[in-house]
Image (cartoon, rainbow over all chains, first blue to last red; front, side, top):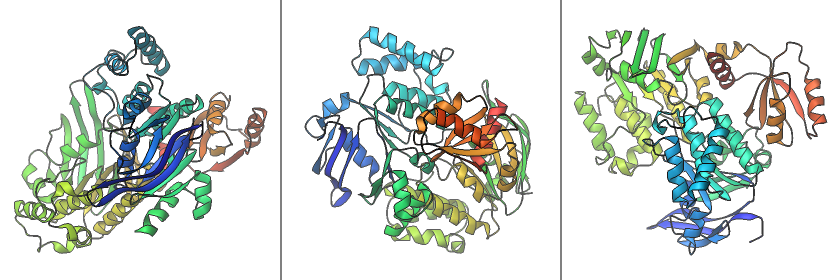
Amino acid sequence: MTKDNMIQVQNLTKMFGDFTAVNNISFEVGKGEVFGFLGANGAGKTTAMKMLIGISKPTHGAATVAGYNVLTEAEQVKRNIGYMSQRFSLYNDLTIKENIVFFGGIYGLSSADIKEKSQAMINELGLHDMADSLVGSLPLGWKQKVAFSVALLHNPKIVFLDEPTGGVDPITRRQFWEMIYMEANRGVTIFVTTHYMDEAEYCDRVSIMVAGKIEALDTPKNLKGQFQVDSMNQVFLKLARNIE
Amino acid sequence: MSIILNNISKSYNKVKALDDISFEVKPGELFGLIGPDGAGKTTLFRILTTLLIQDGGKASVAGYDVQKQYKDIRNHVGYMPGRFSLYQDLTVEENLNFFATIFGTTIEENYDLIKDIYIQIEPFKARRAGKLSGGMKQKLALCCALIHKPKVLFLDEPTTGVDPVSRKEFWEMLKRLQQKDITILVSTPYMDEAELCDRIALITNGKILQINTPEAIIASFPKKIYKVRSSNTYQLIEDLRIYPDTHSAYPFGEYLHFTPKSEVFRSMDLTKYLEERHHKEIEVKETVATIEDTFMDLSKAHE
């Protein structure tokens, strides 16, 4: 593995019985890169992501994340990554502050550290009035912005974002992407899935999974050139339709 | 009119989920309710399908009042809620049979209506609904909502979390259903789907921002709009934020959409500004607004 690769995946495969959910995929993601991991529902994205975050064991192949082997060093992987998804991010019946303390504790931060970080985060997001409100009472967009910051509490080298912006209003969705850019600029590697094809255009590179395989992987610009279309949406439609 | 809403309001404790909503949907129309999570879309659906009573205002569906004639409404509408609504441990065929029986009909009687959709899941008719893929569940739920040949079909975020290919297929199915004289009220958080509707209502925080055809809503965008890009998108956002003539600057795919404050804006001035800030491969071009631009502009004005 070269020094700058934060994710290195080689011939990664996952089988459930005789069904191959992830079929021999290989790719690398560099430090500070925004990597879009796209694919149709059921193409194998979630299964692949579960292997990368150390909660599902590959059937064949190997992957290292932040320098740790996902099979033999899964606990190290978990300590060095951040993760948030649309379905689960924060506890709705805890306040914003309580969530920060809880997740800070889980990641083994000292209480002085947690105090300092939660103050910084509340300042950065402008949440002074809401810090003691229950997370469940926040609009979804705000919740997702807080969740993203919480996923970064322990300074992970990589953050995995599983459909972070689904259903979020268009303005907040863009603010969310500005947060992503800012972190990537600071050197954090971003691994993100989305069904919004305009968001695919914001990524440095994009891979598209079809039926368990990575069928395309390049910059949005090169992919559009390769398929001779104007948008990532058309790339996606062309790829997924052709193979079916 | 197939659906009429007059001054409908609904609050949960102190939160106004719907604030004085009025609009009408014509027979055979494909009407879109476009807005983000928390806008009030589901509350509206639940009132129209008689599962929730409004605090104020009046509404009717297929000519029946939602409060006084709720039983009639239930016989004449199909409702596909946002969350999966089927019985997970019944098979595909059993689910469909169940819904047909409840409405006093049979699969055979209205097979014509669901045929296009059902043949796609028929190979799996012996499979339990819980074991279907997301796309197939959605098709089955649509068949179940249609099996009693409703006059009005309510679809609450049928495409949320669904990939672009399946979304496109779903909208093609809706267009075909419309040909069969079914009025459709559909909600979505995907602004690009708005253009597939006959008319749309843009909704946020329980209020309607605008109602019209997608074309008219786009045409009503009050400002000139430009697409801008350079080799460093992050830096471009930062620099546009502090550019004195910026009204708004939002990422839009590979470009940023930029609207100027002044009437006298010239794209060459912006190009020069960006050159001074060491941007490369600069492009500034006038473009046309999308539904999403309009939505953001209106919701910003409403804040």
